[in-house]
View 1 (cartoon, rainbow, N blue to C red):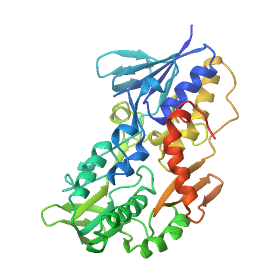
View 2: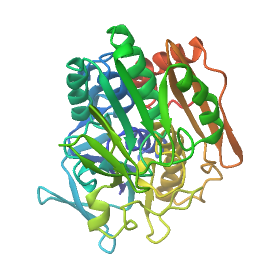
View 3: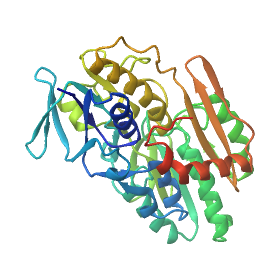
Length: 378
C-alpha cells in the first residue's frame, strides 16, 4: 500500500514538494495537498498591485492547474495535527491520516498586534495591496511613512523595493515634489542585509527618500496621524504603510508544533522537525534564521522532497541537504534592479543596479507559473 504523504499548504514550497514526491516516488506514495482556498497566489506581485503595475487576477491560478494529476487536492483548512495518531483534523471535521507530513503553511500577518494600527496600509496581502493602491490613487501630496512593525517578516528587501516603486509612481503622477517619502528601519541600515543596504542607501538619498534607522514601530495614533517607536521617537504622516508583525499559522500553534510565535523548529540542513518524527517544514513556516522568501521555499522544496521520497521507499536519507541558498531580486526603481545571493557559507553579494536585472525579474514573474511549481529548479 502506498504511503500517505500529506502536505499542508499550497504555496510555492508545498506545491513543488507535492509534484516532486509524486514524480520521484514511482507509486510508493499517495500525495495529498491541503489548502484553505485552492487558489495559488504569487505573493511577490503584491508590490506591483500596490502601485498599479499589476492586476490581482494575474497573480492567481487554481492550485489544481499546477499540481500533477496524481496529486490529490483537499480544499479545507487544517485545524490540528495529532502527532501520536499521525492524523490532521480539518475545519470541516474531516480527518486525514499521514505517514509523512510536510508543513508548508507559510506565515500570517497580525496588524492588530500594533496598538492603533488597524487602519494602517500594507502590501503583504492581496487585500492590503489593493486597498493601498486605492489610497495612493487619492493621494495628492504630503508625507508617506513606511515602517517595520516586527522582525522577521516576509521578503526583507520588500520595504526598500516599495519606496523605490512609490517614488516612480509619484513622479509619474507629477506629485513627487509635493510629497515626502520616509522609510523607517528597526536597524541602523535600510534592511537586514548590510552589504545590499550599503548599495541602496546612496540611491535612496539620491531619490530624496529619507531613511530613519533604529525606529521599531510600537504604536500608531490614527487621529493625530503619528507613529511612535520603541525608542521613544514619533513621526507624523499623511499616509502610513506598515510591514505588519508576522507569525506562524494557527494550526502550528494549536498543535504544539512551533515556538511562541508559531515558527516550526527544524534542522537547518535536513528541514526535519527537531522534535517530531515524520514531519518536515519548508518556507516561511520554519524558524531557520534566513530570509522568509519564495526563493528559500523554492530551494528547500527539493531537499524536503528527496528526504520524504527516501523515507517512503525505505532508503537511506539523501546526501542532498539545504545549504541556505537564497537568490532574490531587489527593484531599485527607474527600470533598474539588483540581486541578492548568499548561502550559509557565503555572505550576500549584490551587483550594481542595472536594467538587465529589472528585466530578469519581470521575466521570472511571468514564467513562474510554467517552471517553479513543477519543480524545475535552476
